Length: 321
Image 1 (cartoon, rainbow, N blue to C red):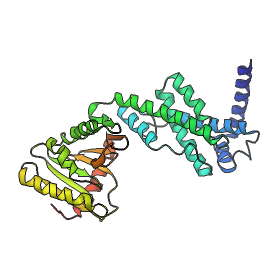
Image 2: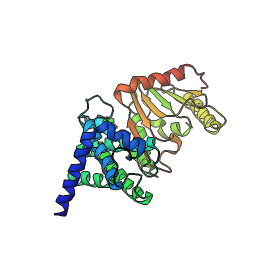
Image 3: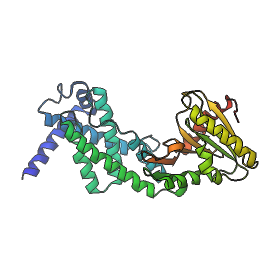
């Protein structure tokens, strides 16, 4: 009887929120913490946040197919959407400003859309239970515990989607302290190049050639672009020496090195034959040494823009090898 009573009360309050409308409820919660229109005890304001998240989730699920955060039918696109969410989880524990609340609510709405689409009923129930604790009125210790549950759910869904990807788009997850997995992941990408291999890393060192040079195919020219600054000199000098020595023995696989200004480069990227971009989440010199890393193929529709950006930097630099 108690559960039925609670459901009735929830339905009555949801009906009240519906009468007020999404925009009004959202504005009240973000601007006054629910004190202007929602009122009532803290539990009612928490219920208002829940209602907003559910409304936002339904909007996202029904949004047009090309929306950045919509759930795509294609596994690759869905995986990228989920990975973007996992990579950009906001602080679910310490948020007190209206902007912080809005960012968290927005992210939770998008995450809820993912879980409702790709999780089973138990997972969805766990997510909904955990998200009720991600509100300012809940003690930070409880928020921390339940934010961990949310992170775990999203990571499991991402791993499940990754297992369904075609091999050439799946990339690889590299566990901490797993040099063999790092070698295999990067080697597989390097071996895809038949004409041109373009490697970008602010902290690129001689280790790339020493480790992966054997996978560069004959007839493939390799271009290395790194940052050139006092901070990176200890990596620049060995890279230049290695490239010169390499060129002396590998006429069919020439290399070229150019150094960008400090601050110009931020990504770790491998461009294959001017048509594929692979993103690496850590520097090649210490890949997965201290923390896990990921190698993943970049969005196909944005690849030309990414390539053009780095080709533009390359074109304005002088060769040092």
